[in-house]
Amino acid sequence: MRLEDISHSKYRIRPWRVLVWGAGGHGKEVASAVRALGHEAVIRGGLPDDGPLQYVDDMNKLGALCVDAFIVAIGNNQLRGKAYRDLCLIPCPSRPVTVVHPSAWVSPTACLADGVYVAAMAAVQDEAKIGTGSIVNTGAVVSHGCQIGRFSHIAPNATLCGDVSVGSAGFVGAGAVVREGIHLMDYTVIGCGAAVVLDTMFPNVPHVGVPAWPLECKGCAGTGGIVALSPATKDPMVTMCQQCNGKGVRCGTQEPPQGQAGGEGSGEGAERSTGVPSETRPAKKRQRRSRHNRRDTGNPS
Image 1 (cartoon, rainbow, N blue to C red):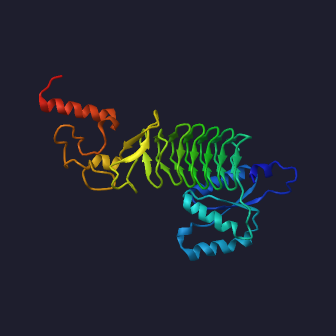
Image 2: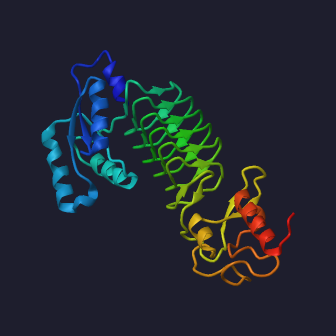
């Protein structure tokens, strides 16, 4: 149920009292949007990790507030999901509501699930689908045909081009851009300002940079790299996380790549202990290596 629809309903008798669960900065933003729609915002609640006794005590006091609906305003995806499920079990309130700021644009053909918050100046275009409890933050753009899973967060000024799919509890950082047709797995984390051009991203691993690479390894030990798909040919190619690429070791280990000695490249065809074929490394690194070899051999060419 969208709060905007209640505001313009001819059957509306009085403004709704909406519980905004979350007293932080994000909660204040959501409360401002509720008031801008002509309803009353009641800010309450802490985080599930504040302590089980305090958290349960806050939940038990909700019946005395006499609210009509609720929305969870917690930025952390996992905590927001837990609070949402707990509030749905309480007799009053048990009705989640979707809040769309008056200055945001939501296409009539877009589908917003319960508990979604669309912030000021955000845009949700044709046939986009936003999952339960997700956040489309200030100035974010969700283009046509995008699908966002439950309890995900599209941060301020992030852009999802057409037909992008974001799994459950995904996070796309502020100013990040995701190329059209990209599929992001559940729990994928995209850092601020990153540009996602690969089809395969990895859960619970921050991806940063242009193009976006995994910042650290989790679950790729012993592979000598992370297998991804080339954005141009869709063929498998080997990439390295930024952490292991800088150390010159295999991903997830502290060892040199298989078949090579540690340290700087020794012998013909050595790959400087990165384990990544030279044709897959960025062009700037190949150029620096080429200049280094010319100095060592005295070849002026």
